[in-house]
Length: 557
Image (cartoon, rainbow, N blue to C red; front, side):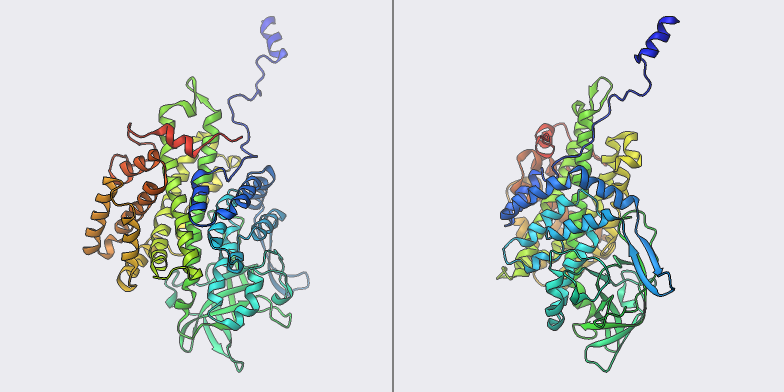
């Protein structure tokens, strides 16, 4: 008894010694991603690699990771009135939010590419977003909408002349003031309403012309308007000539507040750092963008851009959670061996790595198509047509894979991954948003059908892309044949199945052309050849798991 007591007092049996727990991941290099860097170079933005690598180190720093955690723990707060009773409708954010935004805007992750004449500038922005996104996802919403607003405003050159230089600025200048007196602006959008959601043609917000040409007043409400602290918003409303697009500033040129009553902030599943609101318009001043009655046609370019960012953000979330899982299993042991050395865990990680690389490679291909299309470096229109259909395909599939992927990555940490301070629950809550924002799965699947039937050249562009890998893998060749058969007998009810097959064939064709054999063969065997189960971690014994993991999870150092 005395001996045991002495051992306890000496600390031999101390109850709070921590063993078999991984060290903190940060600091780490968020740009240590071979697939991302190869795609950056391949799609014409190799000149940005040094900046992307620098940003990756900053994203993985202890400070930046802490900013992400704090911005989500200290959520934005709505202040409808000041102390004297004046209506102000302001949203207050934790300082960490502003730190994240300042870096994002300063690094050109908002609208800066529209003012950059270098080929590949839009690809560089996407790659930068994929590494800086390792911090947290919420602040990517206002940067995405700001990026997407520029091509819409160009439909109204006199407005673009005033606002585009400020939207493309790399200066983050928060606070509601006269837009033209600020060093940089952020843009939001307000399309959906409570009675219609994605069916924006049912909008009831009205717009009436004033005596001043191009100036209208709005009356109505919006149901899901994110980032209400932005300076200007693109809004849909019913004008005398039909559904139209308008620019709504929060502060008018004379310095007075435009009527933008924020009824409440949404209590969301995830994306907690980002404020999403229900604004009410009542005599709200707005400028017409594009012709009356052409609101959807006018704003659709904004949707194309933000859909690309949904794909980007899902791919980023996959990569971030894969890195977290890989770090944990390298430092955690169970049943006599490190988790990373156990065959079944390696199968799970390799399967996740395949999915992540396919998502990353497709994202950068879409960014390359967008860059060439918007620059006019697309003489025959093939890239424009490819961008149109492939962005909708990617939006449907990559964002759909995100929740299942994130759940599996979380499970690699076991119970440790289920507690908030691991960070994994925040990622898991974020994942479903990206499939919902800018049109849920059905909306995007039906949009693919619409593009195929109404927009000449989209099917040809997709199959031309697939043909560039013809003969490289028999399973891919067979999948393309099946896909052509599905197109001839496709129905609306089968739209999801069709788009899924498009996405898998497209990802496979990219990997066959650009990834190592270990990655391409395993992807084609499982996703196209049927040698796969129904959950991650069911790769066949023939898969080169070691080769896949050496590429996806190199040792940090």
